[in-house]
Amino acid sequence: MKVGAVIITMGNRPDELRALLDSVARQDGEPVEVVVVGNGAPVPEVPEGVRTIELPENLGIPGGRNVGIEAFGPSGRDVDVLLFLDDDGLLARGDTAELCRRAFAQDPRLGIISFRIADPDTGVTQRRHVPRLRASDPMRSSRVTTFLGGANAVRTRVLAEVGGLPDAFFYAHEETDLAWRALDAGWMIDYRSDMVLYHPTTAPSRHAVYHRMVARNRVWLARRNLPAPLVPVYLGVWMALTLLRRPSGPALKAWFGGFREGWATPCGPRRPMKWRTVWRLTRLGRPPVI
Image (cartoon, rainbow, N blue to C red):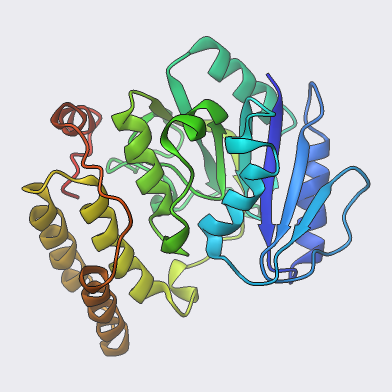
């Protein structure tokens, strides 16, 4: 299987980007072809053989990754598998690409693999980085219903069948949108604890747009993908969870502003998942109401 990698950067972490590229170059087996997308910023110096694309404006995370996908041909068809890696991450092992090849070859219905993210100094995996509700044991691999955006591998046949990431989301929940579409098309998603990306421990709220984007895109996600009866249930549950977490006043104001925006603005094409997909998500441990 031919493996490629898409990395988007704002050009502000040249040392981390170089370390990541070196870790990709050290992968066992056939070399991984890499495309680095400068998302509205110049790309720092990269090793020979790494392709670069510099976009005149920041298209957001999904938009930048979609440009990287198309650099490998329509829907990435020039390769069989694409790795999506954060530019401040680092592949911990040299066999990650080979493990991906083996996993996809052994399971023809496996469409997406979510890697384990671990802090490079402590080795700790944050609970939010385990893409399932029962997240207390990050060392347990399992089938899951979503994946981590900056540490994953996607079979390009999935992208050809269901489309890429939703550009308009810009930041937050774009992975779940793709995951639900892939699951609805019959693909499976695995979380693999033995495929590790080192990444410094951070809080998602470090992004200024976090609370607004999370709320807006949650509404868009439901409007685009859920059967009509589940839309108010899903959004009601997430509103209750948000209030229980007792965010600050400014954060809550931004969240409700994003929630209103999600209803008032176009969300893209609506393709509600089949009810059998709802049951499948439920059997996998995460019904699409939470």
